[in-house]
Structures are given as C-alpha cells and as structure tokens.
Image 1 (cartoon, helix red, strand yellow):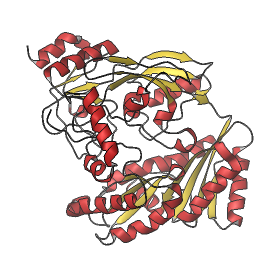
Image 2 (cartoon, helix red, strand yellow; image 1 turned 180 degrees about the vertical axis):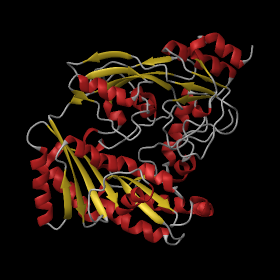
Image 3 (cartoon, helix red, strand yellow; image 1 turned 30 degrees about the vertical axis):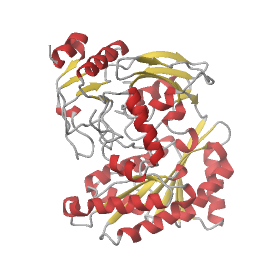
Image 4 (cartoon, one colour; image 1 turned 45 degrees about the horizontal axis):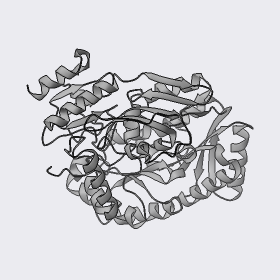
Length: 466
C-alpha cells in the first residue's frame, strides 16, 4: 500500500481535498508549491493518525493554515512533494469561560470570528492584523504573529494560556489548561508557538481575553521627523499609560502610493506630511477625544506635531485604520524590489531611518516606503523601483538591497524578522545573523522532536539529510 492509499485509509473521505492551486500559492507570488495530497483532518485524532502514517513512510508534511504567511512557510517548492495538512475543518469552540475571560478554539478558527465571539460577551481578543478575515489561529500561533496592538497586549504568545499539538510521531501534547499559573515542567506552549510547524502541528489553543474598553478613539498626527514621532510616543505613554493600544508610524510614500495605484481611501490631510503617526486608544475611564486633544496641544507646544485630525466618530477611526491597512496592498500593486519585516530598539528607530537611505544609495536609486509599529520597534522597510520601472528591472539588485538593509539592522542590534517568521525565505538570514549557540540548540530540539525530519522540512532550519 502506498502513502496515498494509507492516508485515505486513516482519514475519512470528508478530509480528502483536491490539490488546488489555492493551496500552492503564497501572497507575494514568489513560490509555487507542490503536494502529493491535500488533507483536512477534522479532529486531533485524525491529525495524529495522519502524522503517524507520514512519519512511518518518511513523507514530509506541510501544515497549512490561512495561507497568509509572507515568508514561504506554507509552501514547499522543491525536493520531495509533501502531504499538505490543512486546518480548515478544525474550527470548533472547545470552551468559553465568559467569567474568567478565556476561550479555547481549534486551530482552524478564523481570527475575525474569534474577535466576534469575544466581543459578543464583552471581551476582546486583541491580536489584530490586516489579514484577520482569512488568517487562522493555528498559523498565527505557529508564526507568533504580532499585529498593531503589541505595544499594549504583546505578541501572539503573550495571548495564549495553553495549546494542544501533535508531534511528528503522532503523539498528542495537551496543555490546554486555562490556568494563569502552572509551573509544572517545561513550557511546551512557548516552544511550539513560533516554531512554524517544524516541531509539531498546533490543533487548538486556550486564548486570553481582555475587558472591552468602554471607549475607543484615534488620531492622525503629522510629526516633524521620526525623532519627533519617538518623543510623541513617550509623551503619549506618559500622559495616557496603558490606554495607548497602538502607535503606528507612516511615511509620505505610503500615502503617495495609495494615491497612485489605490486602493481608494480618504486622504486625511490637505497637504500630505512627510511623517505622521496613527495613535489608537482604548479607555475604561475618561474621554479618548479629550485625551488626544490634550496630547496634541502638549506636542504642538513642544514643536513635535504640525497638524492633526482626531476621529469624531467610530467610522472616522475606522477610516484612519483603513489608510494604514491598505498601504500593504498599494505596495503589492507597485511591486517591491525587496520587502523587509524588521525590528530595531525603539530608541534607535530615528537613527536607522536616517542611515538606511544612505546605505541603499550605494546600491542604486530607489523609492522607500517605511511604515509600521513604532510602539514596539517593528518597521516594514520596503524598497521600490523608481517611477516608470518595475521590480523586474531591479531583479539583479534585489539580493544586494536585502543584504544592505539586513546588515544595517544587525548593526543596530535588531532582528531581520520581527513578526512574519523565518519560513523558507529567511533561512539564510537566520544562519547569517542568528546566535550560533541558539542555532545549535534549535537543531538539537528539532532532531529530538522530529528525528525523521518530516515536519515542514526546509522551513526555519535548512533541511539536512536524515
């Protein structure tokens, strides 16, 4: 009996999917994957049976969540074709404690649906990002997703109390306890979160919920420079404290791209500033509008801001976020030479933004769209062709651009992957910039939990012969 027959024998017919192109593509269009079969188990027992079977045959398995990853972690485009394990059928709610604020869902649950479930009971699940309408919980945890609210609530791993996962040999690890305190040995939850499906397949998670703010509000403030933006961030935190839910930095190029190629959004400023900040608040007491007005007045007196718009309604707040969340789509339509998901220490962001164009000028002439989550040091530093040219005209410079930006990030004590993960795109970067001792430990853990190397081979760590 070959592997396909065995897979069909251990899974119900409902789990078998056609090998459709939708499973083999990724958002940036740089890879096209392959698959022996696409399967969608409906229970953790079915995932266990599948992995046990593939492990016995030595057949690779690539976990597939929402397909929104940007570093190729869900795509295997070379070597032995894998079985692609989709989590789309595993989206049940296992438990919801509206008193304690915990929600246990299966890994196929879509993030936006989780938001709706929490909010219906007066809570929020604060992990928020542009792809939340299709991103699934399993993939978000496997990549330790960030998003816009990290400054207040943390990354994905900070929002999880426990996980259920299946190891390469079919062993089920169940740490779904909703306990806040549980010091009973190694915390496998944090080992599996961020492992990108290379150590186990996350099948369910117990999520932390937070009280829904009584009032929310937002403002766009035009700042004189990135250094002024940093000072405005510190001023906002000093005045408003944990009420600052997000603090986004956006450069003029993002607005110019939206005007050039869309999507069509309402431009908030008559004269687009070189830099502006999107500040989002969630308060249990007091007025967001008054807090933002006070912040603006103090910042103006200090010479930090030149203009500003404070949301007068919930819809206007959403309009502000519509600008921020559509910048990546405008970037896609322009077509980048090289895109970079980086982080540097927050205090060094202004110096990095000043230094990077000087470094890139040695490679060529480019347009730069710098934007991102200034509150946690995460910038999306994307490099684009000059007007009238396309990224194909710069293909011979792409590697040089990437190396220049990443070398500078490393020099600044930063990370070349802030929130998107390593996937297959950044395996070489991890080897170049990662701590050698950490890499030794990672390879040892991989060998211990997946000795046959079947789980997402080639992602995170370079695939080596078994």
